[in-house]
Length: 383
Image (cartoon, rainbow, N blue to C red):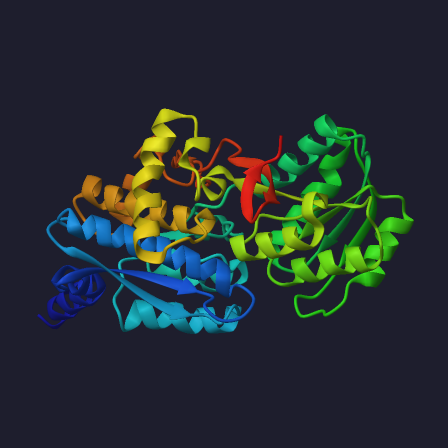
């Protein structure tokens, strides 16, 4: 009799997270966000996109008869704080899934125990490294190679530049892009003649830029985000390097506009088309993509005015796909939602088109980036 009671207790304890989630009045979605620190601008936009998507889903009746609720914790752009926040959301808030921001290191640090809790992670960042963790993670960030290839394709087809220098920060995403840039240059007939690095809080980059220029590079490929990009542009101008093309990373609208104001047409960057379409939806020529983007752009403008749609659009997409997976699974159970995500098939979103499968948890398979520039205070396609 005692062993029977023990078995019953064990079964009840194992089922507690599922029962707790089922008993909640709302479906709680957790998000680890770098709302302070170097990732603050990026993750704030991701949060904005999720929030308006949740509002839209709830206005249409919610999911499985319940309203969605966003629960988020500021990871302060550090892996240590991310771990604390993820644990709180699992144990205290009883979230049923995560749609977390772009701080790769933080998502990596938490991935092992999120996987053990059998909760799906929809990520703005690259996937964690371990296969057991990747099984529970879905990447809404385009593969880093797409960002590298967009720059290199432009240099190959539109310029005579064949020597490039790289300047990268130490984030996992930038380091991954740097390796891809070094290994992939030859494919485009390019040579990496300098490979420099920096820290996010550095105040001057003149030494690294000088070495890139001295090596004969015609273009500086900067792999990094935030205010450092503006500082690099100012350094290039101060050094009088009027022939050194600066090709930046995907970045926040405010940073792009500020950097473009410094260097004008000397500064180019890869951009998701939705970011350029923030002011002019007509640049999206594909009818299905435009139809998916229009309600998102309208909702963003209504709530935030002019804002940056790059990260926000994929935050929006992550919530709509999560809702679709829960509806398909007829459940908020983590395993059921994960399996349903792998079976959704082709999904046209506002930020990109996605196709997750059991063997592929990187949803974006076609390069969504265009090369853009700043002109008259707006983003425009580079012709």
